Length: 430
Ligand code: PMP
Image (cartoon, protein in one colour):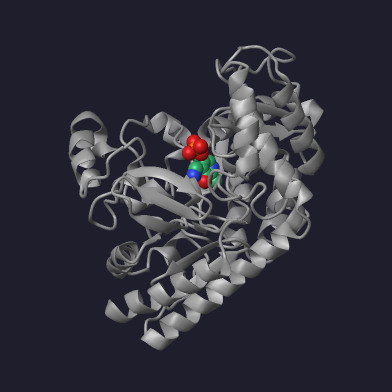
């Protein structure tokens, strides 16, 4: 295709006429940072290339899935192999079985898994299952955590909802919202009191074991262990939403890192290797409540799609074969964190950087960030200026203060050095 300057802008004009905000998912519209979103033509390794031929170092990584970088040749090869055999059968296939065996062998609490097509479907279905298992209705979540856009999760929700100042959505009936309680993240006293009052009504507590959707927020010492204790004591299920952290923080996810077994785990992003996949899993006893074995219904025309399963399988297989890959990702994360920290100091800008392995957020706030209220103290105007300046310098960051940057195995030392240098320039300017 012939490259024309300003193609992206022209495409965005057209897009706004036919899609709300010109996009298929709200944060992509760049509303929180001003300016226009960029139409991407192709991606390779750590780089994105826009339709005007401009190159960017990418820290969005399709919002998490691209842990190997873009267009990894081995992943593409297996995708091609799968595509050549047909795109969808609506019947069991071998890639699906291989991925199921892999996921159940790697994720400590998952013995049996059900594949779906997105993280939203995974969490929505996990809650249905938890309600069925416990014969209770109330769900506890945490402010600033995001678990997809099912009605009952759009209560004090993070990610795009937080970015756009719509943590609660119109269109969610009050009766449904009233079945969700949202409590402050990292505040175990609050959770304990809530359990003392309403513990016998609670079907499940769902939590991002490391939060990524109010920006990166780490769980305080014992927060997750105490959630495990409380849920067990009161007969509620504990759901770890590992849509981001699964295969990101380790092959066994955050649960392996913190050595805590949830009752149900939800997965997405990396298990699809860049194709639309979600999954939820747990013990055979819980998972056999699902149809066709049990009374809880959940289904999907394209669930277990062979191409998506092949992409996920190969992605995780490569991670599995690459000894020390998580240590390397963590080292790169710490290198970037330190570089950004120094850049901010040298530029005289107060920031707080939260990081878990290869995911991090630079908050424009001098205060520690350990929950939603803390995250909201960030100066989003400064973030917006920082974002635009970085973009102009060819660094593609999530277009919101309240999201995680993701590193991949394709990022090089040079990529990180260029990013740190650009950050210094940007921070100096704002
Ligand atoms: N849970 C978490 C922790 C997420 O980060 C997301 C999406 N960012 C979801 C659930 C929803 O996944 P999806 O966008 O695939 O529906």
